[in-house]
Amino acid sequence: MRKAFSETLTRLAVEDPHIAFITGDLGFQVFDEFEKRFGPRYINAGVAEAQMIYTAAGMASEGWKTVAYSIASFATARPFEQIRYCVAYPNLPVILVGAGRGYLYSTSGVSHHAADDLALMTALPNMTVVAPGDPGEIEQLLPQLFALGGPSYFTVGRFGEPSYEALEPAVLGKARLLREGEKIVIIGTGEIANEILKAHADLATEGINPCVYQMHTVKPLDTATLDSLSQRFDSMIIVEEHIPTGGLWSAVADWKVRSNNKCKLSRLGAPDKFALGNLKQAELRKRWGFDAEGIARECRELWQKGSKVASTVIQDSLLLDEDAFCNQMGCSVKDIPASCIRMLNDRKLKFRHISQQERDLHILQIVQRLDDLKKRPTAENQTVFQNGWHENYERSLSEGVSWESLKPKYIKPFQYTSYMGDFIAPETPDFVDELFSIVLTNAFEKYLGSIDNIYEFGCGTGRYLYMLSKIFPEKSLVGLDWTDASVNILGLMRQQGIKIEGNKFDMLNPESGFTLKPNSAVLTISSMEQLGGDYQPFLSYILAAKPRIVLHHEPIEEFYDTAKLLDHLAATYHRRRGYLSGYWPALQQLAAEGKVEILEAHRTNFGDPYHDGASIIAWRPKG
Image 1 (cartoon, rainbow, N blue to C red):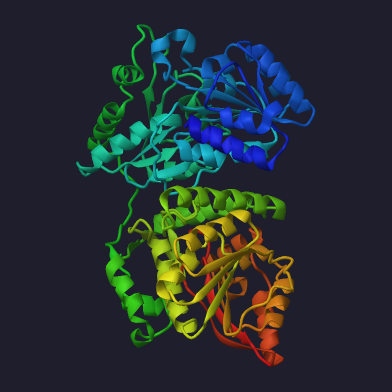
Image 2 (cartoon, helix red, strand yellow; image 1 turned 60 degrees about the vertical axis):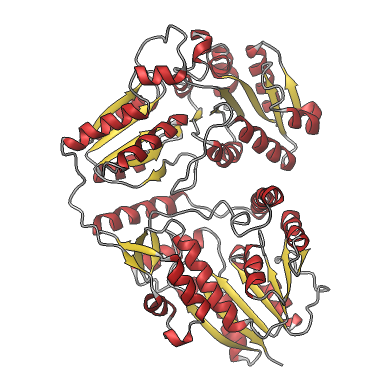
């Protein structure tokens, strides 16, 4: 986790010259790259944690975004007074980082134990408290803390902790679903998530399937998710490597009392005592019953007592076969290329229809998310994509370019997803990603077979150009994006023998001098969505460039029937995110004026948990 923290901090510091790092004589070698690249922005305060906090607070008051880093007990307990008066009280943007919280340094004695750090930090007004569980959560949550603009406490483990798959991204202040289940929900915080997942895997062999959530943000607590879970489950197990007071257990117990909730709570964690004897962390977890074995034992007992979810009918699995695909796409089997039928047969995309209770809870989660949703500023958007595509570049550089190395991190399994005007529960892990690739293969073979040159604008990681290179290896491919990382990835593809070029291109401010070769196609895949209502410059560019065909795979607001509840929610989500708006009516007007010919326009009738991910529009300029 420390490597993930160091690399993420370094990457963010490249983009933001106001980020500075202060250490209490700790982290040698781990932060060598940061010190090498940023020099004066790396400060070693020595074994003087109070002075470290004074320095961080002083710099923050002058506009710096400071990170103060030490062993968790030294970062919280030793300079508590300075944190209270110099950071929390003036509400300064200082990120306190505690390395090795809980009993990670268990053999070093009580001075190094930090099973009370959450209690100390949650007691302070203005303080956000976050305990990520794996390197992925470090990478996702640290940028969000910098954007917070206030004081926060952030914990990191050591080295080599495993990463885990999750069904949701890590969002500050939001509990994260790791595993869906029934009867019991287990909620953990910090690295104990790995013990919970071990227990979950062991229990699965016995037919016991608890739900698992990671409550990485302890303050502010995600009470909305707790409210929702309490309607589905009779029992919650809270697991924490912390004393009973002031940690996750205290926060959840406070929620239960304040909300007068009847859900049964049980706790697994450290007792209210010092850990004497210098035992190893694993030995302490086992002694006090919150290792994987202890967690599994508690689940078995609750399961046998008959704790159950409220009446729910779970449907059998269904297979998305060629008939279902044709129904989705509004075509007949004879219209589907043989390659798509093979993909459907090979990938065996399974799903089930969800119960009314599941549907209602999911709709509630959508409404709750809509309350907090806002459009990301363009400059921030560019930074997010540059950082994201750079991660794919580094992965492709080390592993070689492949379909998986080019997969953006935001493509993850979903618990529920939109499909045919309702929600389903995918049972194939990459259901949405796989179905997107089949839909695109169908469109590519339908419209691009006779084209010589394909230009993808806003190509991102180049993943779909890589896909095109497998379908049409003889065609000339060009990827265009506003980030250097995209161009670098395409350069790696070219080194692997793919017939491809990469160029920088800003779709908001198109370069009119960039011309297309004869017999070319313009392709956009979930890139025009970022233009919002500012599509006109790019549309004018396309009309002037006169490609033979234009193929879009984009979310189209106007395709929703807002008289229907789910379409109304999807359209609201679309607008709150600032996605493409007004483009389809503009194309229709151009068609009415005889300037373009629209070949196809329809919804693909599936997407992510919030809306239809993309629709198909094919058109060409006339004259």
